Image (tube, rainbow, N blue to C red; front, side, top):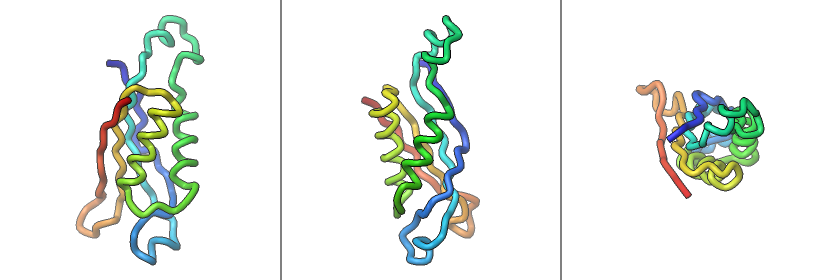
Length: 116
């Protein structure tokens, strides 16, 4: 299986369940593995057959920042749904990390895999 990868996509957004979190921006970091047949793009050296990293990154940033979200689990599910439906990837692994959420850990996160 071919994959397109995006690592450490930083998205600053309102995220959290505590009242003090609802008034600040915090950073989330997303790692994405997306199933994508890279052969047509490679064979033709044609961008129209590639999964555009910039377009994906911009869309996910907009999705995550459009309204406050409480849980990183919700972020992961919304990101996966967007990639499956709007970008038509057949499988995706989404990792969402929230640094600083637990004082004794550098980061906490969730990982999900979804397919259509």
